[in-house]
Image (cartoon, rainbow, N blue to C red):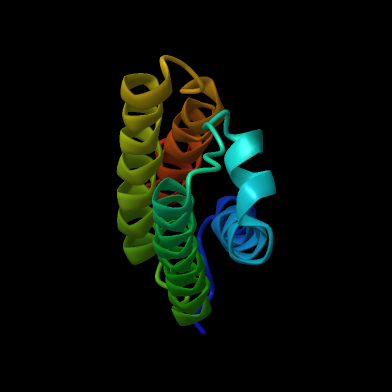
Length: 130
């Protein structure tokens, strides 16, 4: 691992990679609780409930994969690559917020709290605060 020019921002990027992993683990182990926390309806009809659980599995695997990938990129020591990967994470959080607003009429702020934080870390990794 090479020395980083911006260790604070670089190490913060590792901390941020933990969030999608934790969300993914929670969604995998407690799908109903996770849906409820996100404000999505819990269906009791068997087909709809099966769809809810399947979507939670997909969502949890996606989050686990993204979090793990960010942690692997952190291990390379490449600040620019980490900044680009966090940019993809920012797009994911922004899109999730729009999907939440479209489907349940709200809940977007639970997702949109992350892009500004990611934006500051990305800017720091690119050296904008030097």
